[in-house]
Image (tube, rainbow, N blue to C red; front, side, top):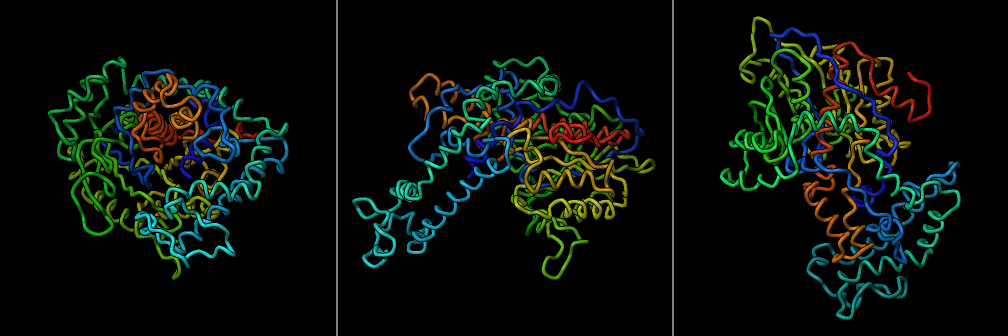
Length: 539
């Protein structure tokens, strides 16, 4: 499923328009008043970007070779780019466009059926141990030959067994016919050519992020990192600032001067009981994530936001992986006996109130005579709400309840789209992304909620290593090239945007700029971009 999601993103940023040119002017604020920003979400907000992968920001875009779009097996193979064409095929009719998802749904149902039959007879534990089929465990009269090899084991034979079941339904041929249809304007061969141009619309964003985070850094500067970091040993909450200082010295990654953070959740810090996981606070640096060697949006956000406001800044981050809005973060106004207020809403509010009750504990430059101002909320969540058709309305309730909780009725809010989209035209497809746009347009929120289009930042090319291997072979020069680039550009974490610093820094910087724009009284930037993508009138 994960592989399919990456490949379905093939047209993520090819022709996406660049919404920003140049810097946003500084926000007029009281230079002594503490600016407080809350950042909340699930694993997207937790963050898995290793700073070593910022090396990719010094490189030209990796363009997968055209051959990867031509190689295809007799049946569906998720590691081959050709078959990902089921997800991005696009014609003029809605009937044609609906066939791809329908074929994939049919495939999923067939595999689920036969996997279920196998696992009903043999547990996953038995599968892992290679248990042999017993004489009476498989109804051959009803189901046909069992999925076993010559030794009577099924573990190593499951792939070919499931492939045969798909062929029996003639599914592979129908899938291929759909991709090869003359109606298809986005054949995989076309898509691969377009991919080479996908950074062009965001060239200004990339240049600005390079200037902010890697000013003057060269690719070879990254080669000295491992040796320089050896004396630190394992990176933990205790030495993350020392770690950040080495990175600043070697590759110019900045450390903010006036920004501190208090983080709760999946973060390297002081262990807590129950659902909390951990808590930590201090000057903002790298490492306020589950693994102290990485960063989430909070780091690039803090760097960019500090450049746009006067005075001290305090970030409050509450993030846990695998959490939904409809359940875990469910706001109080949606509380029912069957669906009570989410536990992670309550934990977040408890932590936020704790910090706001004593800001001086979390930022040494807090002046109680001047006080603090809540500057905004940044929300980056949605993976666990895929298919939740009520997401938009629930997000409206969430924002209203949050503002009520912190007594800030017009608090600016910035949401980050899920970046794993398929192409520019489907940026707002899906319950989560369309739900965020719904919330931004809602009469009660309009003008105070903006959205960062992370789709255009998603580095889809970093998911092509297996496809290149399929096309050229593991010993080929083309595969070695892909392996060398992708190996340095990712944190080997494909689920979380490949753990790529390029994506995270672009996203965090955009979040900061959009919040600063709202704070200055500017119109939300997403409406012009959405109108162009959706072909609608500008809001």
